[in-house]
Length: 618
Image 1 (cartoon, rainbow, N blue to C red):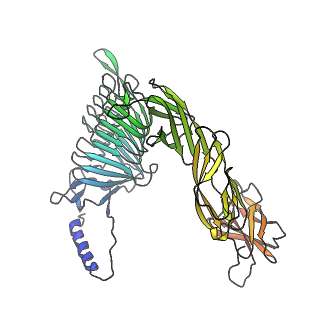
Image 2: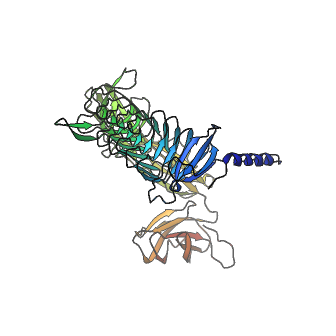
Image 3: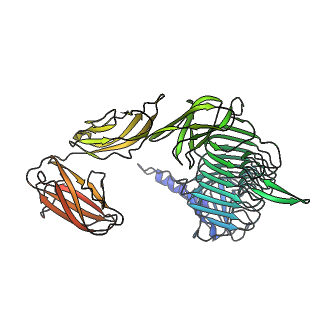
């Protein structure tokens, strides 16, 4: 099917825009333009338009290299490549032969022989955004995503690191992402998403193919797992007989890189081939690795390869610079903070932290960097020789570990932490006494609490952590409250956490405080407008009673009515009510046939009537 030439379409749109712009008072919004193509319809080739470099030619074909249909689109537009049914793999592939191209890969599943799933030809540049789960398997001799020397690829998420994923496998002589057969990798940048890259032969997970170097690899964010080929490729860096190139890791990136090992036989002799976790493949030198943040776990192949540095059967670990981040790896040479090689740093394990937690860290008041603890609660920092203190914190938790760092690369520091364990603050009601005691764990000695936030009128925070008082109507609303707790150690530990405190307006015709009687069948809470709710617990079904305790704050003349409303799937399905003088009566109850997740809302109103109108909520 021949598609409408986009230059003609653009001309029509510009003409329409010119006419509309002549109409008084009418303005046109800016629109982001995207074009959607289905990979299971055919091979997709994208190239810079030969007659106008500001346009791209996008072609479909039944066979690679042929042209069945073509679109011409502005090069600034987004190209969305998706699939009608991603549960079934297609053998069709994507080629970017020239130009700078923005591609969103949306739930694509490619499994192909003998091509690369995505080929970016030298000279082309691709910004690849991940949307949903994507799988690319090159089962022959080619690359999952080919980014050769002279080409570039930037990979990022569309929504989140966890939901936007890319799983890539390269062929026997190629990388998972990077160089094609016997080729070096190009310029590869990963900013987000979960990226898993493997190859089953002689290449690197990310970087070079067999005999290819790693190129330039930058990882600024996301979660990356890279595993070299079974023949001795590096996780990130060179393929077998390829050097590591340049690898930079920073920001909040979480990187796991595994070099692989094989047992080979040559001239009546067995020998092992092993690649580095990050660096060279077997017989490949280490290259340059620069880490300024993030969390890195690098493991070299079993026999003779470095975690970071060279592969087996060669000398030359290259250069490793670490100025931040948690780096669980060994390096045979001297590690420096920067390329100036003025300050050496040494491996230091910090224990006693929360397990598997994203944290912000600093050393001796220096620049902060992102890192994450492992499943043991450990950080692996590289610190200069001498006395110092590591600080690590996240919202609600603050830790410090002090000690002396020597040149052994086996230093250990034990952290002491303080955490604010209070999860949230209950809703308050104007003119009703409010009291909530904040709780902290860890630290030492007596805690002192404070806040830098403006509290609702009538509410104060005591130094012993009690948030209390009687708010007034004028303070109704939601407040962001930042609280700080400080322990008695020297130097002290301080944790900070941000809460939301909501104060509901007092009704002028009387006010009553409603609370669950503690029945385990229900979970008590409040709606955003302060209405008490009781949510039916899992496993609770059938006819059940619900009871509440009622406390009078401001009395109301005569009788009131307690209304119980049963809600299921956001729909009201039943209600009960009890009329009494709740200035005297302190409990009310009802009965419902319930299911787990049902919500019972409870109100005190002045009266119920069939005459129309809404009752006043007290």
